[in-house]
Length: 474
Image (cartoon, rainbow, N blue to C red; front, side, top):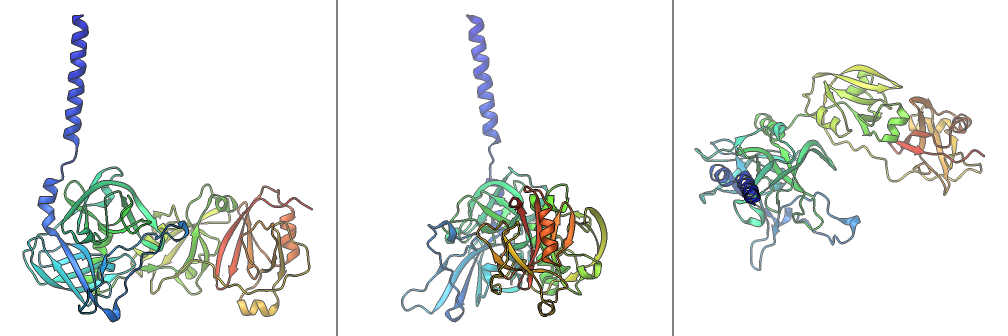
């Protein structure tokens, strides 16, 4: 009996010890907030009504119209008798004692007046040093000295699951502290090609834009920028710009007033599992080149449509979204080595990076030219195709290709009338399509479970369309 009592006592002591240890392991943010909170500022801007652009929140009950990755700034309409203007709120943080402040570009976008309030209630008018909409980073300056400054951290050392803290002004409530964990790193978001976002579950709401994301050492590791929301408010998914990206941008803004980015002149798309099979690649990776701009750095380097770029300047390209970030971060004029997968093998090239001047969208056009269906049988893809006339080749500046004249109800390829099929890829073999007989014979020789890829031109754009499975042979 004494033995049982002793064993129970030991178990209870062990449980109490574990409980106390767990309690001690719970994070304490008080020191972090005391030391770093004073460097976080509240930013308010005003716009004359003639320039106001008040975002509207749609009815988001339908999944098709949910508001995806909404920029979040609350805007307040003036009351009766007030001067016509639009107001917005955001956050920022001091990076130099003489008044340089980092925030989001969308916080100060089109502002006529920018006001900065410190935690000690001092207020200043700020001027814009520069803003970069592509990364959503802005640098502003107030006329002050001896200001508290944040410490910078290294986002590369962040680990998924570790605690992080945000300080900002959600809905105008100044110096609000929220905490959570790092949910993921290197996130790619739609239309955001140049930022590998840090995803967290830290509560971020309208007014937090531009505020800092701290690690537990009290170092800034990110700039809070976006949320995923169906309602316009926090739903557990928030995204921050890594601080190293933001600091590189602010350095260029301070030195040159603008940001210089590299470009090579290609239109790309993601390599899916089926595309990898068609091109004979070991697994889905890299960026598939849809087209190469004539006279561009890529063209001069010998990069071809249907190449899959797997490495750029020594860095692996695992996803197509990696390439714009890597190329964009490369200084124009740099000679960079490239590895491409071409027709079943790896080739090494070198490209002299140019400078990005404008956004380019890798997408198919929406309004193809309509043509009357030809009176002939559809092939194994459910498509009726015809050869391009000499006039069409000249107009489209093409040497070959087959125009789709009809798409049957059972078609297996996602193409439209008016599309031009330029090439077929199967098991790493690339075949330029020059005649309907050639195309139909190629299809006839394939197993019904074959996976093929078609290079399709629609309007001025090209893309690769994968087809899994063909109709039985007639």
